[in-house]
Image (cartoon, rainbow over the protein chains, first blue to last red):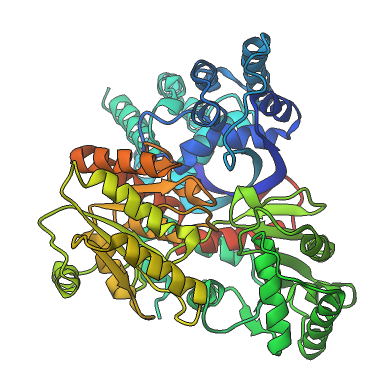
Length: 215
Length: 406
């Protein structure tokens, strides 16, 4: 018998690294050397702050390269880095650097500077994880809690657990598997959470669980 | 005064519950805020609203105000201007006097609390006390820090680096420093007179009082009469729009009447607007929060065409009212407006006029921007988020890892 699922939540404190970039070359050098928490922050900030928009805007790197440097093709490539296929933040950093290095190899766009006042500021985040009073003993209770829990909790169990804590899979799927529902675990881990809003994700997971219970 | 439970409609049950969870982790760690004024100014305003809420959450907290004479505040005003890039002269004697006043205050204050949260440069040197009295120290900088005058910054930096961390309002204010730097944006209070919901009759009454015709589109900039807010640029942008769309322009705001520059700006604005009955230049007296609220709600499009900006909370106020906003990409504005997602960012008079025309002619798109903007503010710029960030900052003083399990 699997243990109850305890819902946690998390909040981020944003830290400023005091480092900035004005060209794609400087962005590349910054990405290569900032802490992993900064790569995580810049590839997930939009998701957290703009989770009402669907489809989500791209990551900070892509957004800045497109809107402030006017390098649309490079921006598109950076936006297309498939975060869901990266199991670790270092994989994400490496893929982002590969895109930048390939594009900047010709040297023409490396030194294009952004307009004054639009520098890219490297930031990072410190994450605080804390237990909520909610837990679920079975799928029915799980749906009841998931429906009312804050989006920060959903975010923690899906994004933070998989990539930042490097568990490779979201917490919900791990619990479904332990509960003896491997099909449901697979269905939820197949979802690409980067292509929907957090509330959309909430509804999708609830839908999957309800379908599974019905079947 | 509102209690934390009054914010349930904005932060949600889970959001308020999480604030209680975080506050509970601070039990036994009293917090002392120190600033330089009890009334007037943004810092006093936010502390006045925040203190009861922190107490409501169970955080043991108090607020002290340092004392200073006219010379001290003249020096701190010059420092403030210097941090904005101004060039008011500050001599060696002034720096010495500044320190003397800080030390005098330190002698009279019981700085034995576990967390000392010092606001802005005026009381910055209180941190000299930490060697004798211990505790954790946070310096909160509320002001624009983009181009600080080197001599003043060097002087302050010597003190900033004695703190455990420094808190800034916008990424552009970060500096290479030997201490942690945290980003905490200011916030608006959805229950204040400036932001609370207003009955339609109040909005109409305010418009009637100023003779604004609500059957035609209203473009508004609600901001102090200050060169940095570029009110003349706003009128020029309006003049480019007017031949294509029959709209009105409202420029409303306050400003110190004894500020010779403010009066000069107002005079220039009136001259630029002369002869056009559809331009309303409204110099509002203090305590006009309901009027400001009503004018923002009456606007079809809200502008904030600043040349320089600390954070620009007027943008958050307009977005909270679900208004489409066209604003300059300066200071903290890009944190509030993501171009073409939650508003429009521009760089020129022509660009501003272009986007105002677009939004007036495409009300569905404008409405979508406004709706997105309101949700963005609800999620990121309300006072409850501000409190959460403060609680996290306090908790971070006792942790060194990137991921902290509480």
